[in-house]
Length: 446
Ligand code: PFF
Image 1 (spheres, protein in one colour):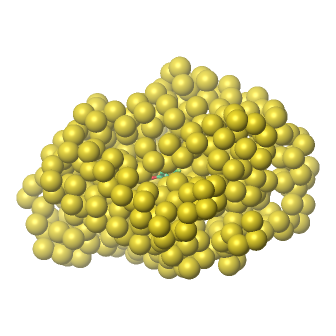
Image 2 (cartoon, rainbow, N blue to C red):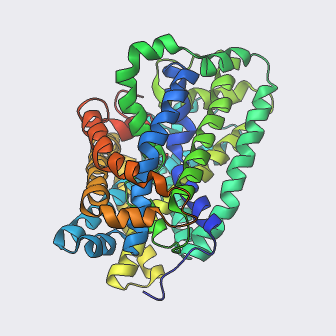
């Protein structure tokens, strides 16, 4: 495939991947999860889970992406060499379409908050655009607008669209988050928030460790964008010399950094306004924060900066999701990219539009369906990387400066044995409502 798109630089690949990873799941689910589960003691467990589960899982996806050199259908077909490969790839395409259908509805809600922030139009009634109240014709309109932004980027391809935009948006997200966190630190009444968010409650964690591990593993994988096929597709555009373990670590660290920073904004601000973040779920926390902006000094400016940051994070995740079906049409069916972008966007306009009208359908797709697809996808990735192609996987793992070569054996053991066990364990316990709960939109959470 001589004329396939490629990244202009390794940095572009890393930034676009962090853009995919750092999204809605990080910005408001992660702080909530940490605060609810023992503060910084949970953070330690989460970091261990990111290193022990998230990083090896993500690396498996990158390895398969670069080895397969195509979008999921072609990649798995050439890797496994049978109809099963195509079926597995098609499964990834369906997964990304399902996730983007509801992600775009949420992106639309965020867009609406961002646009309404300068005038504070929602300050008195912060829940009016979101969750249970967020369905209807206006939600369809904002979903289409969000999808339009995402499609407008993917339309221009990997280097001129996705990479170029990521190189601007990711630094912007980092600067805005650091600025917001610094501003938060100057606000009165935030001390209790820091205390709540960062307290080291080892006792709580020790008592609840088994029930916390499943959600932590699920959050780590979803927040890293692992196993939906998006990062496999991104990895299919990189050159052979890039060290995959090194880039995986860089992505995991940056992604965690975004989540931790978001927490340093969200939790203390809520406390400064006398809002207790406990109990109501991450969606309730999000609405409470929107309401809190109304009483903060410079509220409209801070609200615009905050929702603008969340919007950028959602857009960079959205483009990675759209890239999978679009690039599949390009790679596997020879459709020109621009036409492919239009075709897939039309389909998503309809599927997302339907979800923007129906709370019940939204709950089903964002909760049960997406979760099921991701869990099965994960097992399939692990089976291919750890069982079917261990030798090829290790070869990919060793590229770059070779510094990580001594770890190859342990990595294969983790991918082939430890991770499948964790997934099966999580599936039977707490990962079932993962995706909906990740966004705080599952039935119980709102
Ligand atoms: N990682 C994104 C988030 O945390 O919001 C969500 C996501 C994007 C999951 C892309 C999966 C994916 F393929």
